[in-house]
Amino acid sequence: MAGPGQIPGRYNLVIKEAYEAFEHQIPVTEFVQRLEDDDVPNKVSVVGLADALAEEDMANELAREMDRRANDLEYQSPTVQFVVEGTFHRSGRTYDLRYDGELYSLQRVFGPQLERKGDGDWLVAPF
Image 1 (cartoon, one colour):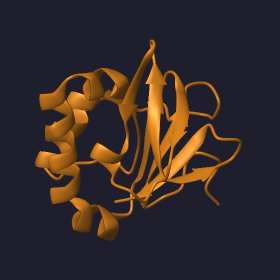
Image 2 (image 1 turned 30 degrees about the vertical axis):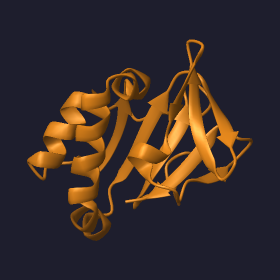
Image 3 (image 1 turned 45 degrees about the horizontal axis):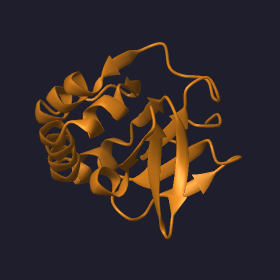
Image 4 (image 1 turned 180 degrees about the vertical axis):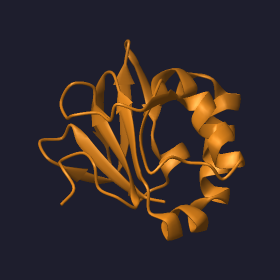
């Protein structure tokens, strides 16, 4: 059974230290490269999302590759966890990441289907 913050076949967004992260941790730039190469590990924690969201080009590239590889990831069903610093902030029907005094839209990368789990420190989104 999957542990909290670690549902296979979905993107798990968790607040750093609220849930156990995987030992295998990679930065967003490497995750994008692994998406491009169709080489996403079976269990991986991706770090540095706030920095990627702050850079429009990086956020767009991440969103594009995640969308392009969605069907492959659904078939492979890895456990992908984004470990973030900051807090999740609900804005209407969507969520933002509040980090370092800024709000970053999570919908622009993960789409509108973010779902809250736990005590608000864990979100999930389909591939």
